[in-house]
Figure 1 (cartoon, helix red, strand yellow):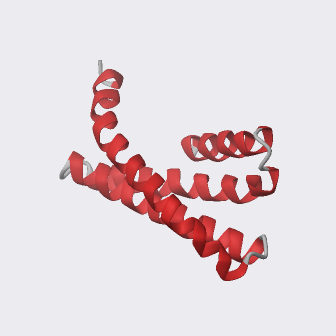
Figure 2: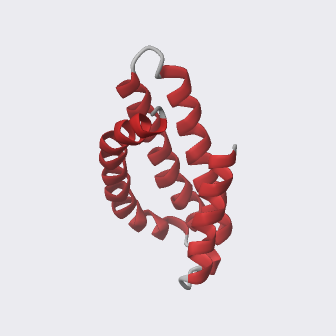
Figure 3: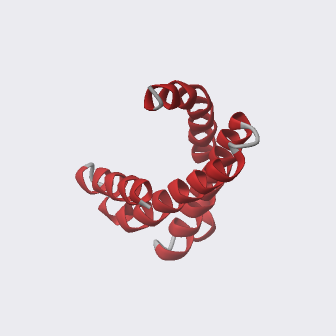
Length: 114
């Protein structure tokens, strides 16, 4: 819960301070949901297989990100189907995020357990 709040609030503040204030409410909800779902999947699956837990959490989070920003832009910002233009860029961002998370998490996990 704390991680989700930090992810949502920090990302929303970044939107506010970088000139994208209209995205801040959506970013807060999307990033909060991403963090909570990723953490729940990681906790549930990591006991059996750490890599599978990380990967499934990361993939689920990125799906939430891609679909969340599409839905936010299409419905709440009124962009309609034109919001689909953001999907490829968000998918690239998501894939990069998954790769970084899968390689970075084991190192951070080891530091936490020292």
